[in-house]
Length: 155
Image 1 (cartoon, rainbow, N blue to C red):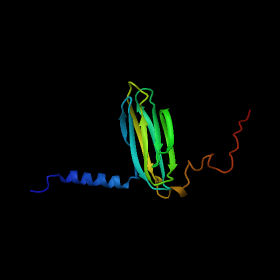
Image 2: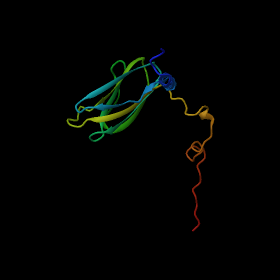
Image 3: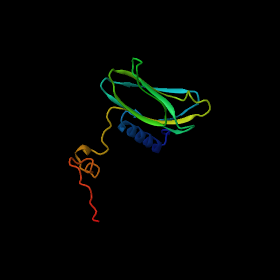
Image 4: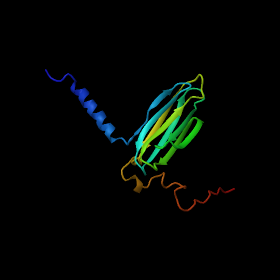
């Protein structure tokens, strides 16, 4: 008799844990927000560390929610009402637990599905040494220091 967990399940669990360890600190859940309800999330952030919140209503009503972020002292540092989506980035002035809430309290009959991405710290580049690479995106007209002359078509 051996382990009751199949070897393939153990390997899969190990791979999932290793993959999770490689991801930057953050959350990307999707949740249901009932009508006339509010849902809050909390995250500890060190002083001077940047964090960002991106959100989007993906189903329900007029695809809108209220959203606000409070610092550890209860000060509102971001507030938007009836938004379909938005982004907010902030550098923490104090260490502590920051709270961000989504509200559907203005709706009396339609629940919403909300997606959000909360990241703490700077996201690492997609490719190693990406800051030193020249790509089509970094060589475009907006990236060049001298403006591109307009194209002249002979008449």
